[in-house]
Image (cartoon, rainbow, N blue to C red; front, side, top):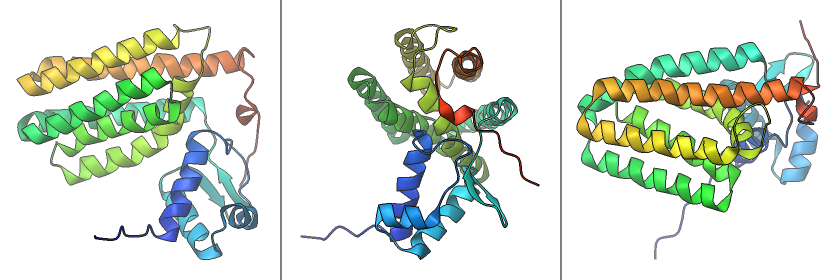
Length: 242
């Protein structure tokens, strides 16, 4: 029986820290104490340092020489820029996916969509977030364009933190989560159908609608914070560095 290959320590450290950032256990603006991370994780200095370098490349942490390493802040401009860039690239990727996608890739996308539905039923916010990201990455991968797929992957890593906020909390300035998930499910199903039918116009329209749905939810969440309706310490940290 073949033995399962052990995951490299740097990747283990990266996955641990990334999950803590996505779920906001590590708050935006929080200082990351490397010695404390080493002690809590039981991992050495080298894998932790390598993991932090990768998190910086993923735009999840900021490194300030002489100041330390901090979890990247969430700002209104940052959210807006991320969603604009993501929509622009994914609109290009889906047009290429319509030409290049294979039946087995559509089958994989359908399978992941079923995992999203199952995670929604179980109310597992982290799994919803991860499978939703994978759903969109698979469509990007079907474009068969390495540059688009790579950049979309990178942005989707950063976007997962925003998605977790959208999928894990109710906010009064927008509709209930149940309705949000209903719309997400319908849009995902429509996108799969349009991929199968090679319907470029409807697929593009549905992707735009899907991006707007996410925008309404995340900006509604941030508005709720500004109105004091959600008590999250992570947005209260105000730091600036030269």
